[in-house]
Length: 272
Image 1 (spheres, one colour):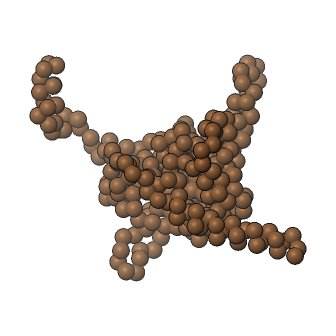
Image 2 (spheres, one colour; image 1 turned 180 degrees about the vertical axis):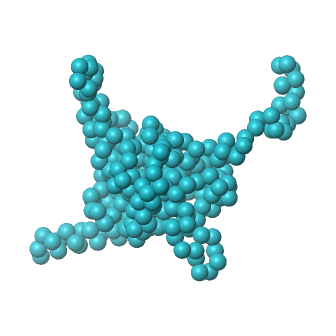
Image 3 (spheres, rainbow, N blue to C red; image 1 turned 180 degrees about the horizontal axis):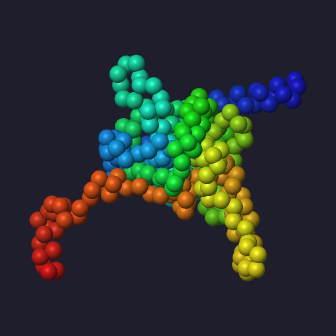
């Protein structure tokens, strides 16, 4: 048997194992409580094509990603507006494109995340033409397979090994096949914005005449971040080039119109 055939057989075996493990990783965790449920109509009124919707997931795989990234956000999707045709059966239109564990790159309706904590991240001053390019990139990626080797990498964190050192966590979630026909959620979105190109967490270099950074490790780690496989959902939240959009504040929020409960009124009166 040639090397190519062995590689194909190994890839097929990995896919079969990965699909079974995906079912385990997608099991929902108990105790999840959304503090700010996402009303689909409210999101639709605020979202613009090319916006990123970060999601706090409630699955086992979500717990792994949160641990490795030390972040609230475990998933990311891109809002594509009306770029996709409406379903023929009259059901809700799909306006999000995402990469899902075990399924690959798919489109879903906004109502999928009705009961989840979410955050909108918007690329600042991104031109309409470049927004369209980001949307087109995501739409053209529909059908890509999920990187099953990524599942095998994440599964290790369900075993009682010592905690993963902070400096290794980002590299741990970058493991995988590296196959361009396969993807994970944040890496595909990073590719979409890099194709414009638009910065997320770009490489930082020392300016002439300035003192060197105290840590050599810090400099080398930042250099690695440019690789799209090293991006995580939280990077869009941390990026200085993406604005956080709050739907409530976008809809003429006025704190003076809030109707407080009797307990709050009593406390307010006491403090006054």
